[in-house]
Image (cartoon, rainbow, N blue to C red; front, side, top):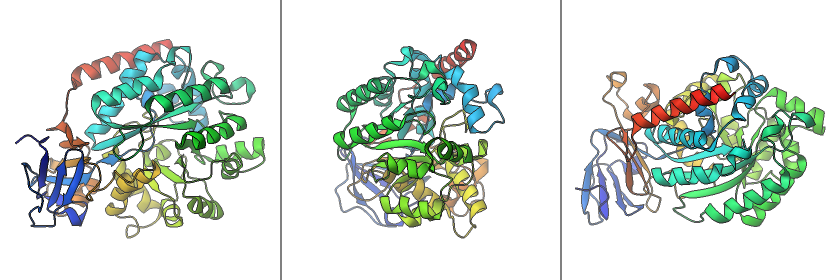
Length: 451
């Protein structure tokens, strides 16, 4: 029977990340209306059934930080084997030549890659704007709508270029009035509110070393006025800490607080170099942390204090970060990286597969300020990821849920967003994947030639 019938039972999955839904979930339109216990049958009248006995059922994964455009500069030779600041300065001159057509195909490729990994809500931090990228966020909204994905898109910005002591070239720096006016336009045009929102807009000055104090302050004021969230990179490297101490006379978190950003409206990418007092302050404020394990390892940035931050009261989510510092957009693979890195910092008994799945679902949803996604409870959105364990890597696995991380799941078999199947039999609905890959490859070649 059709999976988009009015009331659908995802019946008796092989395993489920939530024991309360071990017998599956019942969906009506865009929501979960019932969680079925193990071996049980629904109390809700059913119109259709999807037999999930070969699948492991998870809530749709939620990505909290990305740079879609960077899929065009993966494994870029001049930027290999560098730490963050020299890595950025190498790539800025390439990214400065981005066109809207290139951004469009890069965004589509990144979203499809995330979708195929079981991700149902994607976040992007786009901060590279030039004369050729005036409609960047508009393009991303349209792409997400066409793919049927939830999207938390952030209007990034850079206002301090190389001539004024910042890292980015002047060609991608914008005036503060332009940034704020454009941010307000995007919020009014695309920001949806309440349960089931498919597109949200947040304000996201790039980092302390690429924007002015005034822009940070004005962004916080505009976010409060418009009731939207705030996002930025913070405490990613020791170099950033040294930069803030030299330029502002304070550590990055003190600077964040001084500009009006230390609140539960904010979520931060990376959040590595915090001391004990700062962890406590972040938790008290309820500020979210987007943990980016692969990127942190590739750039040698450090180890995020995930357990301490979560215990203090911070929502901790998971993120793939940009594809030029990862170099993939696969949130299922990122879960495995988070598990392994967490055990390196702590111990196997302290970071479990259940912890990491929580970060990638409910914790990530908390970073985005959402309680309607990231779980399988009645009332939540019908966003689901279903994985098969029929590859050689899973053979012999006794615990199916743990096997997703320990054996390295990388591709979902079925993905549903708002009650609609968006991935079927491992293929994205409505996407010519071969044609997309060809267009993306050509765009990457053209960008490298221009740089």
